[in-house]
Amino acid sequence: MEQIRLLTPEETANMLGIQAQTLAAWRCKRRYPLRYVKLGRAIRYRREDVEAFIAASVRGDGNGAQK
Image (cartoon, rainbow, N blue to C red; front, side, top):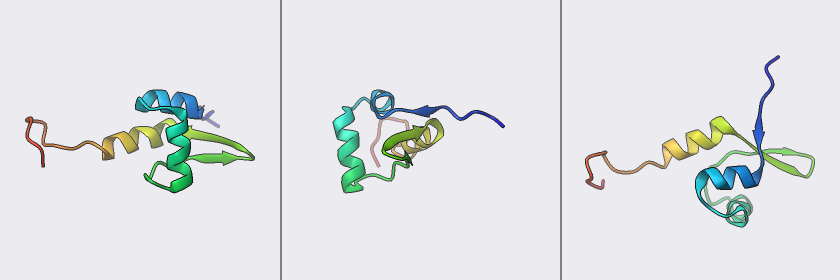
């Protein structure tokens, strides 16, 4: 079985360029559809979920024009 590397909230926040407290607020308020794993009291994120969240958040057509 392949070992899954789960990211801590701090690692995830660093990937997104935000504070860990902001990430906690997003979870609490369900502000964004960023999936997470809850293991007991520990919160972890799968890298593929974070990357999918980033991809889904891309705006514009790539030519400098906003949609």
